[in-house]
Amino acid sequence: MHTYTTSRIALPSRSSQPALPEAFEPALLQPLSFFPAGAEIYAQGEKAGPFYQVEFGAVRIYRLLADGRRQISAFHLAGETFGFEADSTHHFFAEAINATGIRVFRFATGADISRQLLPLALKGLTRAQEHLLVLGRQNAIERVAAFLLDMAERQGGLQPIELPMSRMDIGDYLGLTIETVSRVFSRLKDKGVIRLSSLRSVEIVKHDALQDMSE
Image 1: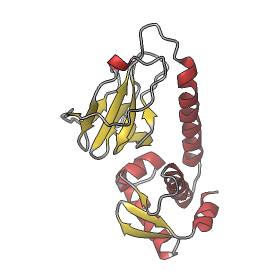
Image 2 (image 1 turned 60 degrees about the vertical axis):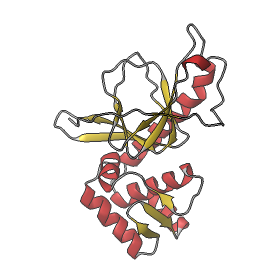
Image 3 (image 1 turned 45 degrees about the vertical axis):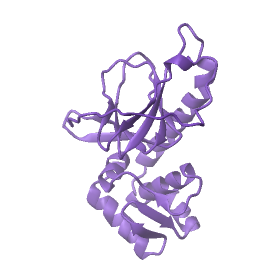
């Protein structure tokens, strides 16, 4: 199991704080916390309660399997929320991929937060279902193509796409080896579908071709 020392540094609050629904207790909104790359945000088995919003950086959600392998179930980018649980315990680990700022949200005692959380929960469910569809595909190219299109959409069509995660992270997310992921990236580059400006930066050159590959 990975062991990390978590560093939490309270940073000055931004002038544009996230809008808080009435169900949130402003006094319980903690200062922005900084997590260096690889730092644990919460662990599997820990008590759940608040939820989290990525202010900057990126987070991976994962579980360690019985044989020691790691399965990443989700990535969360700036502006996205995570940490929702069906009960009072976290069922996954949450870890900063790179230098990441996290805002913690707590709820006012006795508040009914179902209306505020329902859209966020449904969005997370839809993303989980789409991830299962990707994992169900046999072709590695289909999986990587779908992943790149998803990252592009979540970054608002930004070009180039920034990939804060490593090739190993992508492999653990898509159920592929790091060698297969690297091979697919090289193949897409050779075909002129993508351009690799760096290991963590990808430009989609032929969006329609990538879309066809993902289906």
